[in-house]
Amino acid sequence: MAAFGWLTPRRRPATARSVLAGEAAAEAARKTSLSDDRPDSAAEAEESEETPFPVVGDDRAAAFFDLDNTVMQGAAIFHFGRGLYKRKFFQRRELARFAWQQAWFRLAGVEDPGHMQDARDSALSIVKGHRVSELMSIGEEIYDEYMADRIWPGTRALAQAHLDAGQRVWLVTAAPVETATIIARRLGLTGALGTVAESVGGVYTGRLVGEPLHGPAKAEAVRALAAAEGLDLDRCAAYSDSHNDIPMLSLVGHPYAINPDAKLRKYARSRDWRLRDYRTGRKAARVGIPAAAGVGAIAGGTAAAVALHRRRR
Image (cartoon, rainbow, N blue to C red; front, side, top):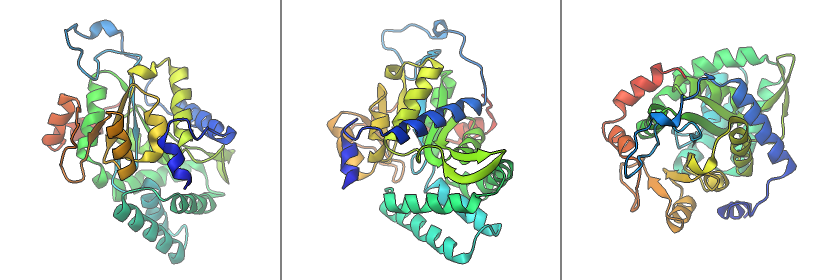
């Protein structure tokens, strides 16, 4: 299977379309970033014998979070499809396909490339001819209806730990960048890297720029954003549940496997990466998650949830 090629970083080289998708996602993310503010300087961090993580005031560090099953239970594109069906964007047959794909995702706990590609193709055909502003407005409603209650409190606490340290936090997902940007804004994050659908005059054409932001394309997006923002990837962190994101996780100095699938769990343990599973509350053998984030998760993420909802970068 092609998926096994992603178990070794860079073994599956990025194609020209992957690079194009990554660069387009980085450009879109910078345009929709919620704030241009930057931490004043690393001098704000207190010196200590053992440097805490995340490092307070490190303006060259950032965190990158996968979305589906890492930040949110299930896949954003499927929840978005449910909301569009409710608004009569498509018929019951398409809804049944979305429902089956979502059921597979939740039961298997991993992404099926065929299902994901089918969902993206369906979504592109559905939004073709609609205005970007219309879909953004509807996306806000769909978030409240289907997504808000599916955010993992533990992962929110991890994101909040980075925000509290003065670092920028980005979602990185195969979901449409518009949907990802809405979720990032609602969670108080800096912005989002997502799949970029082509639009002309503010109207969707039904085509993508490059390819879906998946696998190697995510790594290219993070690499492009880091270069544009002056980030040091060795000081950055990345979080994901899927072995498909090993290229992205391998880019940074602080990779974390969150709710990992079997392949990622095995790979992470072999590389001594940090793991955390919020699906059952159990800790993996090697946790190593920042203490502040762990406390937030144990507390149910209540305070973090309020702060994340209200915070605007």
